[in-house]
Length: 334
Image (tube, rainbow, N blue to C red; front, side, top):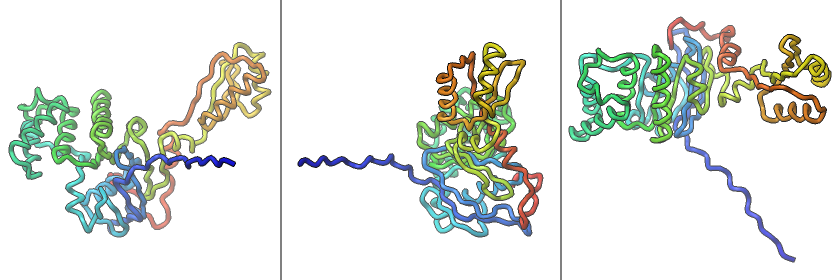
């Protein structure tokens, strides 16, 4: 008898964690801002933290970037303990805040060279890095102009370029496109995608623009009243919200009547000759609807899938009464 040995399937390699946190808490007086949040963010990914004003987004960034201390909890950034090895953490990260760090009185090149000096780069390396970043961010033509003359989009690009002078492996972007016009915002998105795809950088992004998180993030977490109330991919979060449906249009009312009898739970619209069939947005659900139409011989004119967007997720999950013992959020970002 011959025994055939088969090897077990090899699991896909998992990426190491760029940021981990357990039980982070922070209070200001009697106001509890962070209420024990946990994070695990993979290297070379974009993680978006969403939440209303006062939810604790900026406080989370400030703790993880060593700007302030947590009251409780534990965290590692770039493999280093947040408090016991804070200098090593700082050398591995870059931070671009809500408000530009650009010096208006300096030129674009001078702003970059100033950052090179702060990172203790020698003059030749500083000039090389400034030149490369100006070219990468399409700022070479304005390298000698003072930042006060720049548009909002140009200033944000220069701000991010200044963050990259130190060659960070993890970048915290705290609402990086606030106030930008749609074209400038999309330019920033392309730059952020390039940092991850080309350089393997990890991005920790906070944003008020839900489309931004949808476009960029590998994983999204929703923070409200200092607690993480949901986490997953954009699609996973959307599937948690009711209201998704498959909209099927038919040629005439006779076929619509037949289809309505088959899909009993569907909502019909006589004027548009359509049925709205509840759906969780999954391929399996879509396939089931198509199979039913095919096996029953009911012809459909068109079919579209409608799923909740991140606006629906945000509005459904956030804004509930704050938990007992948690102070109501202020109007300012925290």
